[in-house]
Length: 459
Image: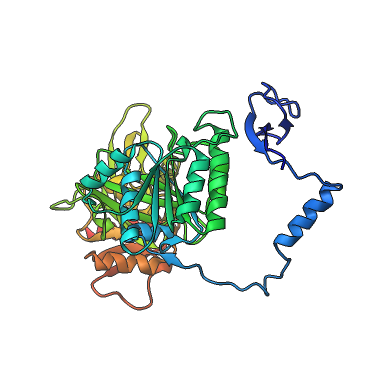
């Protein structure tokens, strides 16, 4: 059998070179050749016909109507918040990539999840490339998992890891982290683009062939994106981001890609002495505890996947100089500038000579336009120095013409706010439910100036 050989592939044009060059011989791009492995094909009289014959034996062409569509079976991890992000639990043969800042709690969460899976009867394997087995055992003691039966392998050589997975046949395996694993077929160092891509590809094939669910832990860059080639995210089935401030006890796990469930779901955890614990009422994190209403604060209901969350929007308007600043945290700064122009043009509220600062409490990032109305009401409240009524919230998208557009799934947002004790709402007219919601007074508006008039009347 012919051996595999090392080649160099251009990341720009896909050209191939037998040796490394500073400039691609095909597209003349500089520093784009990366090391990869070419599998040598078995000798044949007609190599094209032999490849087509081999391909034809693996699968048959079928119409979509003839293919039986079955739901994938999931295994709960024992952590409700993690299961929510995964779409219900681990999937047989699924590959999950989770990334986050150093020390954010990735290894802690996965070790806890493996222990819960092992206690429920699943066979598990924890492959650590960054720590020794003794260090992993020490962390398990701190987490209160003294009697844990999770199997641990301290190894970074790919072939040995694959051999162990083949011998142990675990239901779930964790590779911590993919940047430390290396293959002897490549000469580049662990963590390089070629090594990460090649090792992830082999582990993915192993998962699909054996049925073992594999979780890959990935490093992140300074910008917060997953380190390594972008193709890494395309190889796996699910991509999770572990977010949060290391100085805060709360952590967010966000699904960016999920072939077996919904995307944009979030799981909320609190870091405790015994590890990460799920937060059953995450809205409490994003709401400041004011004894009395304060100017510049407005609560809105945002959607994170299937979950409605109440988030407090805070605004501070202060006299500025000749070049007033517009700063937003957790919200789009360009959209803030647009909303200030709409507020001036259609509601007659001018902030041209004022510094405007807007913040979404709790470190949450809001990307949907349904926060527009709450942002404008918070800015107006701060500018006038008058607080909004107690139990007040608002949501709705604001257009350039001053219209207030409906937000998706408005009835779920209203019910969530009513469940948490909020009693007064200003929402788009199209989001008003047909049946009244107990304990909730709803003011329907179609334009920005109407919303401002309603708030003045409530004062």
